[in-house]
Length: 185
Figure 1: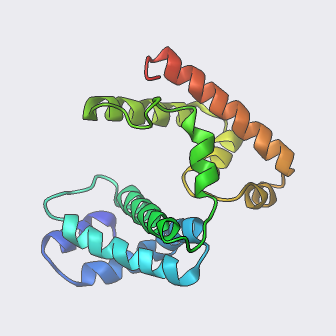
Figure 2: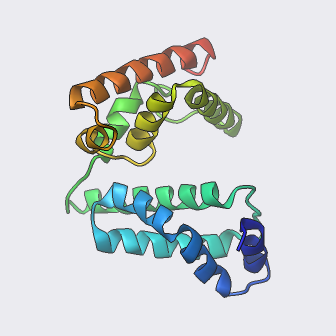
């Protein structure tokens, strides 16, 4: 089943949309959720919450790319659940370190002032990532989109941990320069 058909099922309030979504993107959403929680049950719950959120957002929203839409929902839900866990002092994950590493590359208060600046920031970061070499892109996204530990990234790509750390530092520095040049810092 293609994405457009699945989206139409959501718009028609056909409950089979969730099954179709699960079949096509369940593994993808689970990988994102597990990257944030490192807990099987939390990851499953985050994925189920993703399906519920997709159901609630369609309609009125009609995503252009369903996979990206679901990935973003899963990521936001996973981050929210992680924040609740940290607030309850029940453990942690890679997220504090991931956020700290990227903190120097965003506006001083951590939040762009308005929606226009957010959109410009998103556009600039997306363009920046597309300009990276294939290996830099993969390492950057594994770390800052999927919140994977450096050790896991190194093993995945056959790099040493120091090479991954070095690549990430150079990429963050390039991103910082780009954001300064664009006037986003």
